[in-house]
View (cartoon, chains in turn orange, red):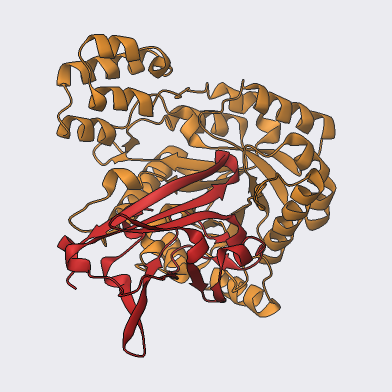
Length: 337
Length: 131
């Protein structure tokens, strides 16, 4: 039993968008700079084929050669169901299923064992896709993403469906953002830079340290203390935070398909994410002997945008390097090598 | 992606026919983290100072061709890819004079899990480009 380190190319979005890196550069970085092996992507962001939903055999062959060249393996593909494909109406269940079938087919062709299912997709659509997923041999994991949490009715309904269907092809993909418990250090630093009152910001941080859901209730207090747009903005940004007890991973271990190792900012001194708990969830996964993959998902880009140099996207790479040092440290010999 | 990168002031140019500027082209990159099929583009509006050019008068060019927004409403397989510069033609007689003016692009994509379209705006002004 072991965990594979990998990266979702969502992490490279600024580098790719600006043309600083192409698809192969992303694969090379994962392999040569991070010494990781798992590749996750969305074909609608970093396409592997000219028609992202209809790859040719030659394109599939080329992709497999690329994976072999760098010793990487496709772990997860991010599927989307555009329920608002047409203006003025929502796709019917049958149409949603058709889009889903398309994504399962593409994932299977490119060798992805798993797909990430977007959280708002209805359980009944995913349930109807189970026989298709079984046919293609691709597992479906509903993303559990902030502000969703394990106790949310939506997630519970989905888990009930998983239990009823009892197929290894349907489960969940938790995003580590559900283990976030306070504002990131860089968001705090930026608030101070914008003239935020250090006393009020200290108060905000103390409240979050005591309770990750503080953002739902402290706004009136912050306003009463004289907090303006900067201080209130900081609270609002984290108003839906809800730290999930990592023990849920043990409780629902049967349904764990894959993980998004979401992060915003690494502390280079302590090698910790400044606001997301990695230690405890990884401890639980080791204890239960979970077998699967982590995809690093860097989502801190807006914190690092620099008006003086819009072309610079090196923060994505630097943060990934730090996060993988942390993952290596925490996984230890539980890492799949 | 940074919405400021949606429109590069260097990517605006006059369209000249028989020596007369019949309008100008604006190259846009998608203000979203993935590419989408063209039917998902809810709206694009270009503003030139106070003049407003709605999608009905614009033409949109991707690697697959040049289309009106009416045509794009049913295009579910042709796509505007992530990072791809699409060209929007704005039919403004006389073209544009960047040094003294302001161009704004507003793009709204229907994002299903967000519950619909959210307009994203990018403004460039004469202070960053010559005419």
